[in-house]
Amino acid sequence: ERLIPPNELPSVRNPQNGYAVTCNQKVTTDDYPYIISQHYGSDARARRITARIEQVAPGAMTVAEMGSIHKERLSINGQYVTKVVSTIDPADLSSDALTLHELLLGWDGDMQPELHAPTAFAAVAEALTIKTVPAIFGQLLGEAILGGGRGGPTHWATLKTALFKESAEEPAGDGPMATYVLKEGDSWASLYTEALETGGKALVERLGTFEDNQDAWLWGNVH
Image (cartoon, one colour):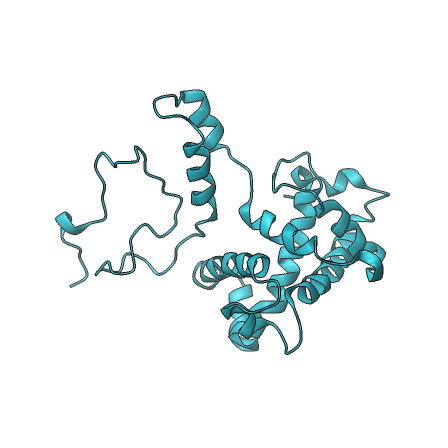
């Protein structure tokens, strides 16, 4: 039977913590007996919003604060990527890769449109995607996932967050994602170095060098 009985739909009334957060992430536990969807968004935004809510004292939440939380632009994935990039020795990077490296160092993940670092993050993330999707799914299926639509890209968005998280927390490449992505003897730093090179070159070809055209590198102008 495809329909979920109304009294068994996921729901919460007056939760003990005082709030509920839904950002297209999975909201049920693994033992929930019904399939709601196989395409969930990353839980990164939900975790960030939860952190913002918990920073407010009980009973002190205001409409203005909720508006600020709704407009939250801090990227947890961006923080993961920056953490790995910060472990890379810049000595052997090309000038294009070095630009991304320098923009990401010290960045807190804020995706404000007047910043340059979000553009660098997007370039590294895209380069990692192009490199890792075929490695995980094979060339033919990888091309289908990268081709667009809802199913494949949505599934990849969830896996991508897992990859970013693991690369930041398991830098030596000891986690499960590494078995699909890294070659023997490689580390996440070596993969990210390649992404810096590929992403830096792609941005320069599209926008010109950072030194000559910084306005074009602003996140608000690129996104």
